[in-house]
Length: 107
Image 1 (cartoon, helix red, strand yellow):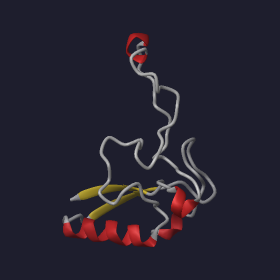
Image 2: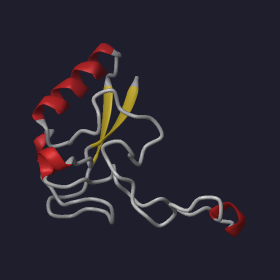
Image 3: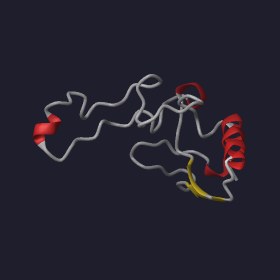
């Protein structure tokens, strides 16, 4: 069993700001659909409104939390994950929704 692990999530309580949970509502490619969604172009407002289809059972967590990393790895082990693909940005870099951090924490 293989799984991808994205360590780009940040929470206000752990990191001092939200990252990725609060991304901008993305527009649809047609104006007629966009008109039905007044939130397009604004950001999600965590912790209740997050930029994810499903709400995580651990809540909107920080990928920098050692407790969260341990819990995720335990859950993956229990699920039989034997290959983990770790997606990260080099130290000091991030995408447009992220904050630069320390990708070595998981390693």
